[in-house]
Length: 113
Length: 112
Image 1: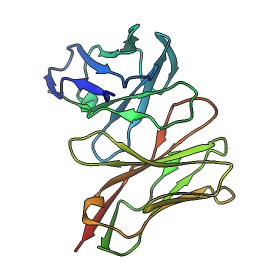
Image 2 (image 1 turned 90 degrees about the vertical axis):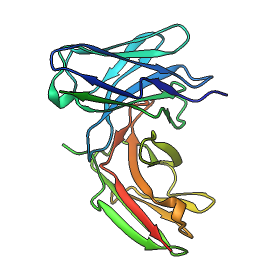
Image 3 (image 1 turned 45 degrees about the vertical axis):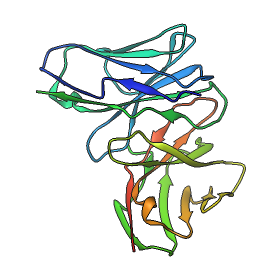
Image 4 (image 1 turned 180 degrees about the horizontal axis):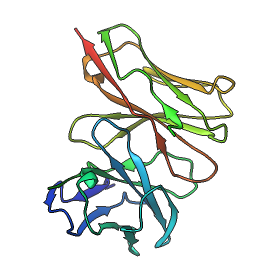
């Protein structure tokens, strides 16, 4: 049984650029959620994907977008990067509606300069 | 608006003693609560959960207590071990959504 893996682990981008982060979900899970964790804060829900469609969104602007693929892997895209986008981005996989714990990847540390 | 609050940013406990981490929430619609542990450079790791129909759930050294009337839950670790030193996050969700609302975390340090 494979766990949740994210790539890359670290990334440095310039303000205004675009970035794509990737996540492969745990075997048997069909839902992927993305979270942003700023320094000293708890993870903040960005959005969730189920059946390749967005299924719930937190308080993040449209320049945060995502995709889920038939194999349940997912991408998080952020356009027009701002300095405040610097954070740890976490991907979590779960079984939709299963009321079970979500399994997190190790995260991608994004630094915007 | 912080719906899940962990008011103690840090806690220091001697090895072998009990660690008690607290969490308060404001949304009465939350019906499922989880605790996660996070080491540096790793993602959060699930520890234990509790449904709102229960007031206690136990798993080995870890016990979570839920007081719905007070909108309060706590995590007890007995006995505490140095390997328990990490940041602990409380999280909550409502209905069938898997969207988790996290607290800001409590850094636990267990010293010998």
